[in-house]
Length: 413
Ligand SMILES: *Cc1c(COP(=O)(O)O)cnc(C)c1O
Image 1: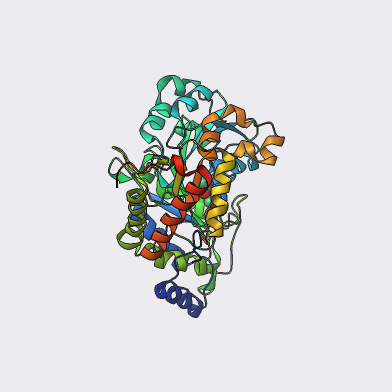
Image 2: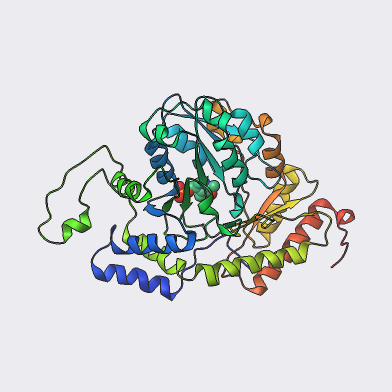
């Protein structure tokens, strides 16, 4: 068998939506992007949704929107994809990394210990789709002592009067927190629609706004649309409708808009996400858990607790007591059997660039610990029962081979 890690979901509806875009003769930002934004509003209950050409673009845009730059600090977890810190560096600011909890989300206590008068934002990463501890993080940014320390450096910073809470929701579209869509629990939530994510537009992303009442989310939406298109007051779609040739550039914008041809892919997927695609992911998660539950080496990934439910983006299998080298061997065994797996994530302080600018993994022991024994298994709607069973058998056989038969005690079934 040959089982890919995370192929995009492309059915006839996706193909039809893309072909429809091609046949309208309008392929860049226009009605499909609008329709996608409207689907995202419905799913997330957000105040506004702005589609962009990647998560990374969206994050750079929002840090700039908040006036973050030279000398500022943004707190991020060490355990994430590089983009979570690179967006901060691209703004000239300093990513302050902190360690994670055992569920792999950012540790609010560690965040608290790193807040200074330079802290302007926190980027919390919903790893594998599990929302971070948003009640604790919101309490922290709204804490009177923390607010008293805040030194506004821009108009928007003065208006909010506190640290901005940004969710890196690259994994977590469709996740829940306290019975509301998790996006509602932060000021700014950014999704990724990269090819491997739950919803994809090949490349793309979306910024959801849920700013408090001191902001007009609709005005900020209008601003961000312009901000993502060179600050140009009349977009190409409007100009294509007749004698609207005259335009102006109002401010120094970016070019980060999403094209309709890409939006079409995500639009068709999103229409069946909540009722079909997301439940199918959960079924795969439950099958894995049922099969591995009796094994004493199995560390079950947290996907649901009293407050939160994940979007089941990853199945981060963790194996009790193994070394990093054993983990790598198990992966090799799996790949030899035809199952493509992955590791989420190599902590940023272990990557060459981040080491070169002074980050050291020794300062993030839990990030290393969670990384060293982790193997991400395939989890997506198209997986057949036959494939799921094959993956389960491959895991059990590979662990047995590498860790040894003695360790393999099935307690119950
Ligand atoms: C994929 C990913 C990103 C980056 O998304 P892009 O759309 O590729 O920019 C950021 N953060 C996390 C946690 C991711 O997994």
